[in-house]
Length: 321
Image (cartoon, rainbow, N blue to C red; front, side, top):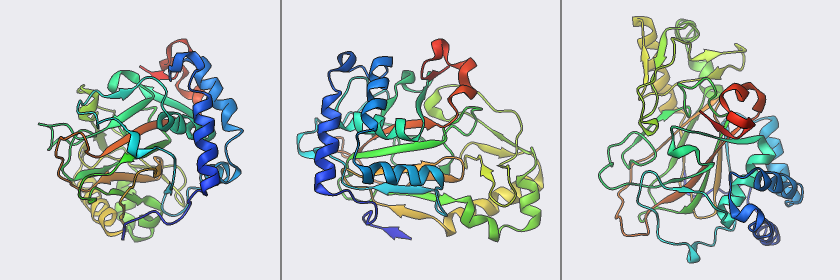
């Protein structure tokens, strides 16, 4: 199913103005450093003052991410006309406050705790997702070919619970779509044999290229938790089956992901949130021009159980090493 716009969860003009003013009010905190404890605490306090409709959308999704495991809130004030040129480096991140970056932080603290991973873009809490010249075929955020379905950081024991993507600028031809598919829709169509295979520790997942490491997780199942509403952990470009039945099950899962996929063409000001526990995401192909006006998203990860990763977060910070 293809949606050219996100026609639900649209903010009113008054709510948009309120969010812009709120984001600007915390810009001076900690000299704008997004990773400073004072800034994160300021965002937490400011989140209590966001428009009621905005909080309601986030809290409803937090309670139940629904059959699709994803949502889009439209109309956030990213002020596209005043944006700088789209970054062109794969290491590009946002270290100091801007209105779009602070909107991501306000949403993140409403859902849980923002986190980042030190090997990926230096552990920045707000990361740029932009096409990079010479990396068109890259299976990661710097590429522009079809991006395979994946749970974010599927190899990692402390992978995020939510992935947030805020569109600052769409691609030139308006064809780059966020693709999502949810295990909740797929499960009724998986045969018992495939469910059994996907629930066994017969899969190994490697770290994504953006981590720059060759790390591999220990053998693990794709499906865990409640048989009626399981969690899922898979990366179709990095998960390898260890048995023939696991291979067959993975191919069937790929087929069903495609069958039930939804594609949303994000516009400037659209905030997409993916429940990384039950939904995979990817992206359709597009053609960058590298002219300063290419597609530009900003990304933040969120976890709901912050303490679970405490051992891997030095100083009780927000960066997982």
